[in-house]
Length: 553
Image 1 (cartoon, rainbow, N blue to C red):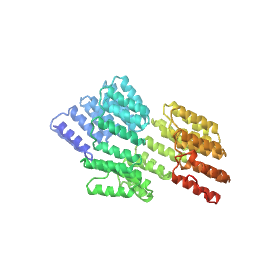
Image 2: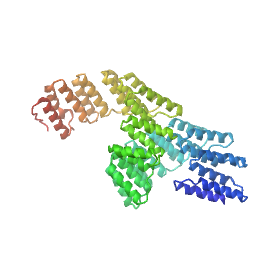
Image 3: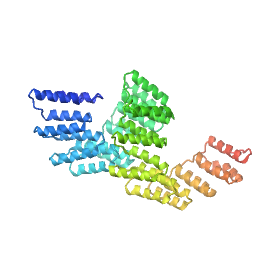
């Protein structure tokens, strides 16, 4: 009877924000007063309620008491404890519990390992997540679909798309069928990386596999399109969801708010929150996170500061996610004092920072060339078991690039590759710019060759960097040849490409050369737009003080 009641409380707890551990323990006491002895189901249910209430010490107390009563813990017991610790980012304690269960002869199962793998990933420690997976395989524990879904998410978040798709193919080879979580994870990963064509491809493949889009899929698509800057398309997906007969809920509102937050549409976001409240949907931490982003991206600093204070003083529950978001938005705005305060709040409240929060702090220090502070954070990351990701290294390279330390930038680039992390355009472009801005074009060209050898084609930023470096040394012929080359390689020049050349001619008083350059623009780049054409002509006229007739305009 008690087991049934406590299990009922477990389910009730999942649907509420309140804690029911007090009611659960009262049921056990009543049961014992009537002469009933709690069995393993009762103890596990009570322990689970404590875990979901984040009463970790009390949950361990249940473990001690059940053993004192002669009831041996099972794999379910330990998995429940490990899950509760992992959920709060307390992976050291969770790992210690795994060791304890092994010492007692209880072999970790797929749930144990998958919980830990997912937990390490959530706190940004993908190295330990991978090690846990390797241990799982070496112990003969076969991954399940949940394990594979977690691995898909890990590889995707690290930008290792080949490895991600290998896992996707492996789960099918093992006789498993991708579920909605698998498909939604792929959609989410590609959306977060801005690969909208891949989002569309996966969505089509998902439908061809017979999956009818559900609410979570629509939410994922809304997020994917909005992250890629396609707000209108995101809102169209939202409308299609309604048209398919799916009623909105809190998750739907939060998906729309996230899209509005990215676009800085704070006024629309406030209206959505008002509508939520009118329909009796209580805003949660995701809701307020989107509002923070909306205020930050919409440059409404007064509203941002007011909501921040409401979080700090408890008017809005200071959830870990909210405090981390404050770190991120203030870092993005390059507000050092506010970022430091948010990060301190994170630590003071006992919340474990994740890799994004740590990168945010490194970023604000890096912009100010505060090397010692960056070194302190890197040491902290190592001590706490965090794995620096590509963004971590790119941020640090940017810091050293600002300081003119070219060799240090390239050394970090080599370190990235040695750790089997694939450098991106930002990585290579930073090193190229570091050398180029020092006039070391041979070294910059060498890094460009390395970039191409790695299979990464230069982008417009890469080429513009070389153009800017050439004109800085009055090497106009080489700069224009570089523009011709980038066009041949299928890379479209942008306004900055031509601006840097024209401005350099003006700076050196070479008006006649500037006129010849503008006159030959359509020959250099036949695809130049009329608007860019005419703007260049206008700038040339200002430079020369005469009217210039563009023959091809």
